[in-house]
Length: 162
Length: 188
Image 1 (tube, one colour):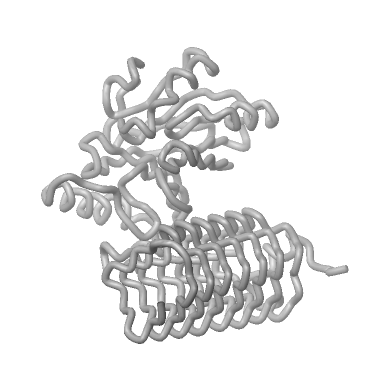
Image 2 (cartoon, helix red, strand yellow; image 1 turned 30 degrees about the horizontal axis):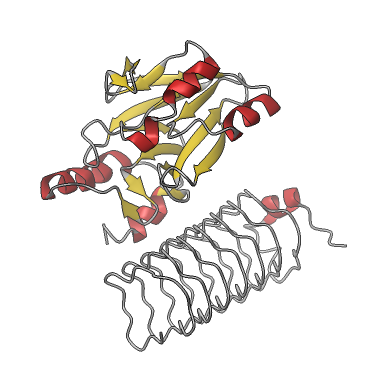
């Protein structure tokens, strides 16, 4: 049983004390984790619906199967994080940095990744219907077998696989 | 201040917000695209009563539920910059005026472009921007002139707010002034 509670997580999120912790399965819906330091944290199957993680650091974090509808990850760094099978519908991903991030089989319906940097990210078999990648950097990103019509207006798609 | 969002998927995915002063329990509804049954259910579950409705602009997806909301809430003020919506006479507000929600003072900012009557309601740390500023976008406009008007209003009325200010838009997820100033593709 994890010793972490929602209250303790919110209180210590910016201190770095959570880095590498296993927080899987804790209800963090609507939690205020703005500017949190969560590198390497494990959040598999965690409820992060409407959680606020603007400008947070989640490098190498694992969010497989996490519920992230309407999450705020604007300005966050999720490089090398794993969102496989995550629910990211309507997520705020504006300016999110995600070099090498994995979104395979994730649901990104109507998400807002405008100006995001997803260089080398993987969106294999993801749902990107109505996702707005306006001005995003998608160099070498892999959208093979991705489903749905996304908006790639003024995005940098050099080397992108579709 | 507690803010409970409601996403109305069947009404152009519009948002409306129930906003409560946690000290006095004064409660407002911000925009009313439909008076979804979840709203009275939430109010009743939390023993809250609406004391006012605030309208950001007059498009149908933000006002259609107004008669139903008033039928439920009774004779409460409807704050808007236009004199009437859906046959309901409003309490007209204008830029620079302040409104009190319990212990919280909100300021009206004129944010036209999407519509001429567009206003935003700004509390410390929380901005209700209607269809002026969205997460990673701005509201649609009809002419180059109104597009310029929209960007200017956002730059002069919203972007000077503290970066941590949360932005609650008419559509889409919550965002912050810092995110939009730094990354919104319409300004970068």
